[in-house]
Length: 226
Image (cartoon, rainbow, N blue to C red; front, side, top):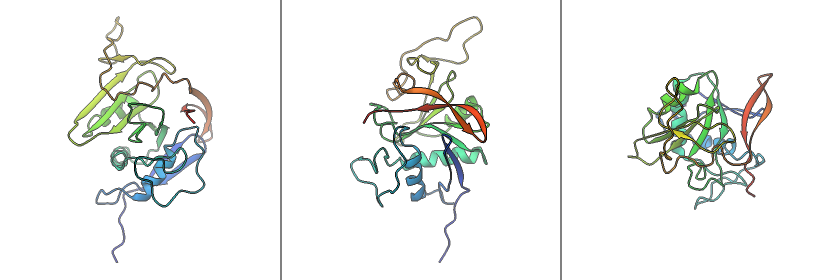
């Protein structure tokens, strides 16, 4: 029997306590089902405890797989594989994933992730994201993450810039950085699925975390929607 061929494992970091190596796809590009389960657990809301056991199969109808855990879209796994291939050997830091209270957002359907790549500037990361087909990319220059979501085939490229800082209402702008001596030109919400709640929900806060043996500021989101 021919042995499965997998792409190199990718390291994912969630807070200070969860650091996991995951094979996302096979060599032919197909998504590894166990990767979907592992990432679904990692992308749970910060308020949801890590489940001790997972049911063998995810329920139908968009229901949660386990309390606080929703099956993430396989297409999002494929996009994360492309990110990992472009930044080989660098860990992906999870800021936010599944958010059940995010009405109208791809986060609610477990099709989006807010993340960083260790050692990579977010300006560079969002530029790479913008090259992915049928993908929503959000750039937050005054925060510390990039938003990426998986959209239906044929959607094309979707991009927005939100110049708000942590705890502030969204402030969408046309370009960044602003021209010298001028403020950023604010625009209307550029996309119907540009998240309304990235910065505005009251449970977004900063905490001190011990990462790789160093004290580091880490953006963390806690959704209390039980």
